[in-house]
Length: 187
Ligand SMILES: C[S@@+](CC[C@H](N)C(=O)[O-])C[C@H]1O[C@@H](n2cnc3c(N)ncnc32)[C@H](O)[C@@H]1O
Picture 1 (cartoon, rainbow, N blue to C red):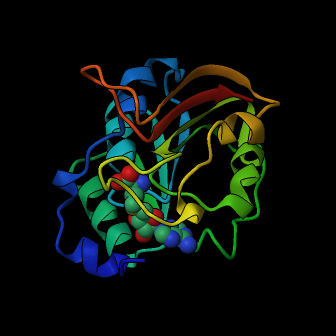
Picture 2 (tube, rainbow, N blue to C red):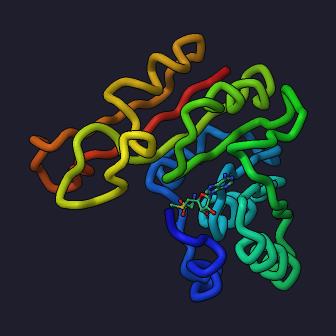
């Protein structure tokens, strides 16, 4: 596991980009929604959504990332606030809080259902991360950090599925994203 503070010391918020599923499906989020970016890194998703007029919160373990996001938000007058949370140990005590929760390239299996709990009724969960077999050395090796095939469909089977894509190693056409999952569902 990298030392995330070291990683973000070297990086600028300007280099953070939204995930593909957020770029492609952000139109599903109602105007002026309350959105959480979960394990945000430098908040590529959060910045993208704050610029679209949403009220965005970002949570991450890295104090360096959180400080950079908050400075960027003030300088750019964005409705975006970041907080430090260790989302593998102490989950903020809240329920039915967000209109949308966005996760990219983070997985902690034991707490996946927390993402459902913090969504309001009708709220949307966006998830993009690595899954299945590793393709061309992309993404983590450890199973703990890769979704199993169809795993999100099973864990969130009580949600209404709005979009799902799971390209595997045999997908070869232009635009294939082997070894990744894109998921959007409504509570
Ligand atoms: C691969 S990065 C992805 C960052 C961002 N979501 C993105 O797509 O660019 C994983 C992120 O998870 C965060 N992270 C790791 N362990 C965490 C924990 N226990 N609680 C909260 N965030 C954590 C790291 O600080 C890092 O920002």
